[in-house]
Image (cartoon, rainbow, N blue to C red; front, side, top):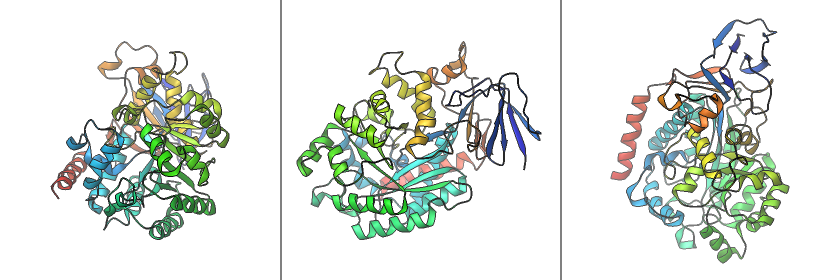
Length: 449
């Protein structure tokens, strides 16, 4: 086993206030020692990495995405639409998704995230047209090949337009099919690999695309296997109106009624909660994924992060689907989180370190993972290292603040489990030009079918 000392960082953010001013010692993919100011490692060192030009962060963690949507960025028919008509415009296009297109969309999204300093991803895939029944298997194999951590959420839609939902009939599945595949995926992939890369969660898409039966059955299956639950909730006022009309309940009341209001659930967006609902979320320790860019693009609103955290709800960060963002860059999302929260709170009430905490320790809490999200002894050696060597950083005095305020977007080096995945801002696992070419061809084919 090699003992690696990443030494003398220009700045370091541990997400827990520990002193690692003189670096980190890594053995066999695990952080074994934090080297404080003026100290030397107590371990015998085999290799050193001089981080004098780097700002070191825990690997960023993305808690909500839709990888397949990288194929429909800046899609003309869907531009400048609110959520419901936006979905209704895109569903027929997405219904033509093929296994090959899904694979390259997944790979492109994950590599794009990796280059931004992201080491753990959560994808919400709920679209299963004919021939794409094994969509999650495709994603699992892609994540394993890349060596990236992933929480793959087996999404579902069962409520088509003819039943009062939003999606077309061609992309929905029966309850029997959904539950059988969900159980198969848990058994096959959840915490089964030796490197701790893959986890599986169950994720009916939203209250307006599945039946209450699916929500209840998914909660029961998740309880049996002790896996997590995920869905979209309280993203727009239109969703509130839909739930009141269809179920006679606000979204959170509906969630509670189907057995989802607990600490193994996390929700995407979580914008339109009232005071009483925020307290209930906190008491249940139900997680929230804040998606600032998507919320701005679709004019959905602003998540009440400080109130949710004060109530006890874990809050993390997500880029959301690339059709509503339209990028997969988690470092840029950190800055967006800071800026949009400054529209809700005073300047001293939400800081650059608060934004960084969302994407690290906060996101790890949302995913229920205690092995990542911080630089601490015993945590996995997932790291993102940034240089301040672009014109945007010239004149910056606080290196950590500069990452957020000056708009860092690309990591210089990224490590997952002690293995370098990015060096000199280059992806080490493949040819990015060839990947983009395959992805572009798949996108054009999707629109030509």
